[in-house]
Image (cartoon, rainbow, N blue to C red; front, top):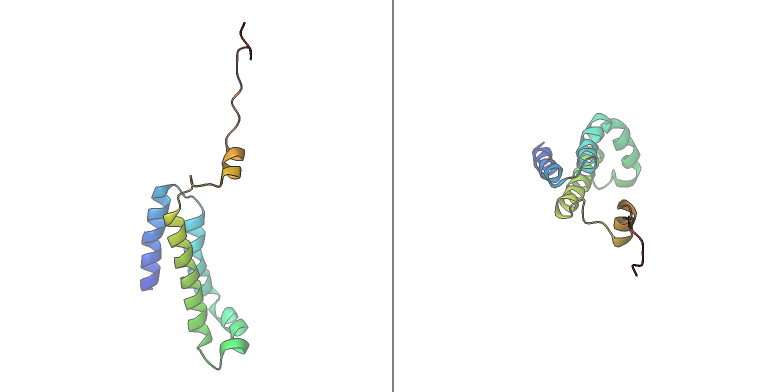
Length: 102
């Protein structure tokens, strides 16, 4: 639960920077893993049961992915788009007058 507090703080910072849905989805991931913990632990059990606790590993993977995603989201603002996406996002301005003046 302590990691969830850090994730909520990072979400608030990302929302201030202008992000809309990405931080909220990243915070919803650990909450969803906590809700469906028995199912996810059952899926992880065949692979990691000999080495780790499957429920703890599912929580750790969810928190790790959410923290990594939130750090990337906080470091790159939504205005930092690649050049192609920037060209597609902005409509081209049209000239109102003639192209050539004599």
